[in-house]
Length: 413
Image (cartoon, rainbow, N blue to C red; front, side, top):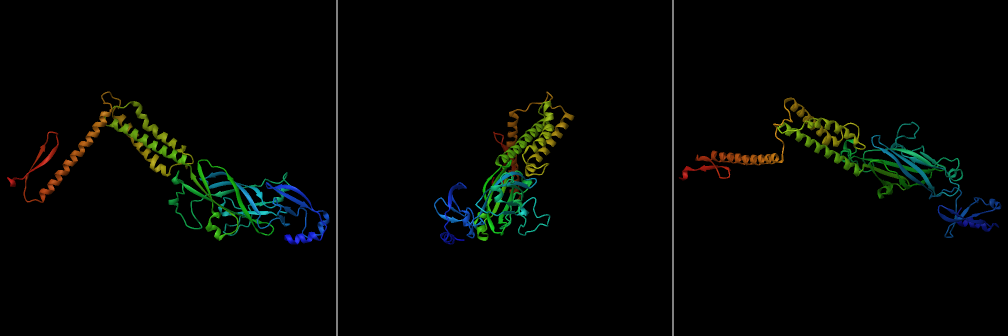
């Protein structure tokens, strides 16, 4: 019944409504009630109309649904387990725009995106969901608060590799969607839900009002795909299409990188100590246990990376701890062999000083000079091979000790 038809029926009856002021959903309204004598007017019930704060008259339909009914949900992230490929979400109904005579609303989720489905054991398919995940009873929530159940429900959402199953496909190698790429791996979780009126299957708007929750060692971002223009052009129904991206936090990435660099620094220092002991420099007996103890210490530090998979096989293992363990095992073997055939702490051995490092640098400089001298000999020999004359060669040393090849051409004499 529209506004004009309703007013025409009131003019034919001597009915005086009794109006009271009330507040609904943080807004002030004036509710008008009729006496029982008005029951002969079809479609007229108690609390039949409301006067808005601005004074505008509006009639409320008996069904109370209307085209603009919306259910507002609060989404809370409980936990996210990448190893189990599961993200637990807790949903709460926080508001319903229906004011009176509200029918039940069925809330459906795409069960193929959930860890456990509600299809009753039937085979998986891409059909429209038929079994609701949650049934919202607005009447029970408003008039039976003592015995009504809490309007909460939980969904276990699957975690997938990053991909755009509607538009384009992204390869797993480019997306780093595997524990092998820890801590640089990335994952997605899609949530698709819609609501329908249980009495006539009309679409009811389903809106996320707010979100909350954190997951340890993860950086989580959410994107509403249903608000994109390309999505709204194809689907006009108000529904939820949420895409959640899960990545390792920056602090965790920094920690893993620092640990890997530390592995390499310790390994190189120990390997240098073993090399100096083999080359005849004196080392204390305590150094003997350092390479062997470090091998076991590294294996204990590996599980300290938060969220790292058990065992070995991630990218940091191949570029960090595994090569370091190989070098440490070689150093330990060399150190054991050194103690079998010599005494590294013998007093006759010289101590390693900074002067020894400088001498090593000088040897490197001399090796470069000898290499340049050899190259000059090769070049001169090639020149003589292609020449008809056979000049005499002599090597002359200048006052600085530098050697050079001197060519004497007797044809010019």
